[in-house]
Image: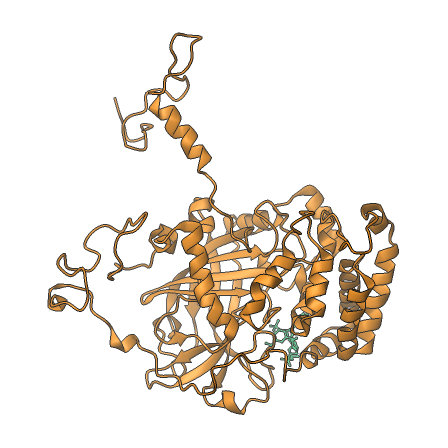
Length: 519
Ligand code: NDP
């Protein structure tokens, strides 16, 4: 007799036997009509979906965003008004490693947040660093290629990484952070998150402000050295998952303080640097931090695949009161993230429960694979086009109040050399020589020199030329560490003779020494 917990086929019929296949005689071959067996094997073949090209290895949890301060003069976003509490999902990730990669690898960490607001989903898809490696999206795929496997050797290639970086001085800032203590946090709870791009706020009066988002860990910036990480990876490759999951299960909910930096719209024109350049920060003394509130993670997913793997974050998801900026990398990501989800999860990825907005969604998109919304999606069965005459009979109508104020744009439509007119050294100098103390600098030199082990001298010298422009001590420290790494027993044991014209590869199994970067 079928009951509530009866095992059923996908079509809902009671499943009588999940042990023995249907065969012609006890020792005979199977019958094709054993539908349940075929269905079971077919499902197994389809259990994996394409892993993300980047950010494949991730850990996440549910929580809430709480607003404690009044920032209504900057934004009308309902989820950012004092007292608002918004359910949310966070997914943290490494960038370069595949799904089976070890958690404790030196890499930039993805820091993706989805807020289920009453005005729809707002996604902030940032990193644990305030800057990025490139400022023009033409260089985004090229950069990522240097982080993934060499097409012939199928190994990670420090030569490719440093070749690209040494030809891209704008990368120096992010590479410095990657090689610093912050490049290997102890867990996702021990790192900051940054929206990284410049975004915009707009208020009830239609005034626009440029904004940078910061999420400051309340757990402290604990990090591991490469050597410590290697030991951990020898014991577990899932250290972040274990730590985040268990901490939340124990009821110790991690928190991040939420702050913003603000710039009035027209001040961008007076700025002595490009405020839309993703490779630079807004200095704190010019743009002080403004407290907004905090977020807390307090619930693990019941089903990792359904709620974390299937989660689709895209900077294209904004809500009234929050919008984009002219940052060229952001403009490209508005397209490429949503497109990655259409490829990975399907056209209707936002109907998957974890991605679904928390209200009924009416619009005029029609049909398509896996369109599972059901019901009258336009609000009126006769209104399957727009404009129509059914607005007063439930058909979806526009909300012109959600339109952001117009943005003045001027200038020639042209390709502007993104390497001209930028100072790629001063902010790195401030970080290395002013913000870091001597032990931090020494670890930075060692990490970077170690990561450069075995790369061709010509590439190394080009890189040292950039470090010299930051500060002679930076160059000297990394050069000494590089020479030492080239001589180290470990490197000699893992390296193999190469011909002069073959880019030298390392095995990539010494995870702590390999830089892995970016988004
Ligand atoms: P500040 O001295 O006011 O800011 C320095 C900031 O650097 C700190 O507030 C902290 O940011 C961050 N920081 C501290 N230690 C490290 C580290 N080991 N690795 C990376 N970041 C660290 O000066 P400025 O605002 O003028 O910035 C100076 C430099 O600091 C910048 O050029 C940039 O490299 C770096 N920085 C600046 C940030 C900004 O938004 N202005 C943010 C992060 C780094 P936090 O509070 O975010 O932890």
